[in-house]
Length: 337
Image 1 (cartoon, rainbow, N blue to C red):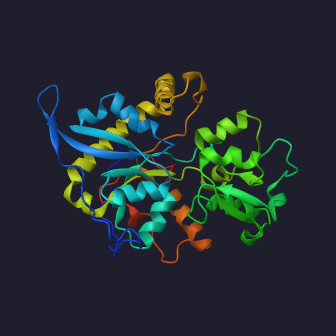
Image 2 (cartoon, rainbow, N blue to C red):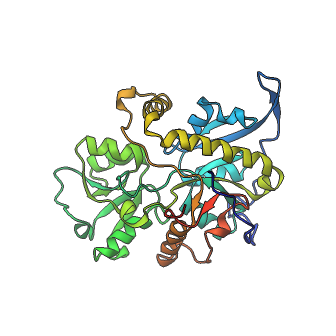
Image 3 (cartoon, one colour):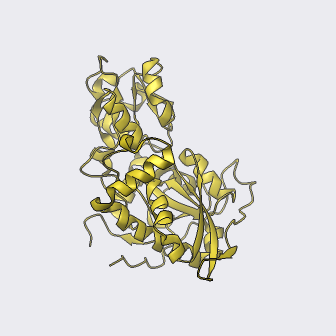
């Protein structure tokens, strides 16, 4: 049984966009329609997907879950969390995969966005990211990173929070490590060229580096953020106010897709989707994927926000509930049924 949609929570009070985004019109892409093979009108929706955790959206497309909900979804490739959020805010797409932490920092600064539903979560049992160093690196533990440079996908954007938590837990102060921004695709080269001493890749980028011989000295995401939402489906408050029914249908399709995706019996199909999207041989696809949960785990989501406040990334307090669309599916915690 699907979790019941949440009751009404207080919404974000501010609707002022961030500098650089405030002048962009929040125009909606969706709302158009075309006839399906059966003659029913399909509502067109543009959805931006990230370089990671994109498989469930493609599952929904390939398995016909979008069409079953009366949606004609166009999947648009996106890049880093900030760019994906900007695509939604600028009206280039209606819904975008966002980083839970990036959405929290943006919303706390007044960007009028809400989380429609969850996507990838931190696997409590399997490592899908970690702090990696070269095989012959003298760095053996996190404590050895004092005075070193570490490559993260975004500096002080929230994605580095679990690394900061792990460093602090190891007795290394935040100011004792230099963080530099390195895209996932460039992390291996950054280590090879000695631009950085360590990197923190995720998802397939992490597994590829491990398979290539890079050594993991810590897995802070699993250790400090188990079951926390990592990627979430995000839209603007303006689009949701006018397209609530469409958003609900999108969530329903993604719940069906998550059920298919999380079923081990469908691993080969997910691997094929991953390979086709990345234009690689299916033999190179991961043998395991991060779990997906469309209902947002509130307890774990809030713990991530609390850590952001601890490290000064959030100056204006905000709760997990405030980030959610009124009809977003939730559960109290990962342990809740």
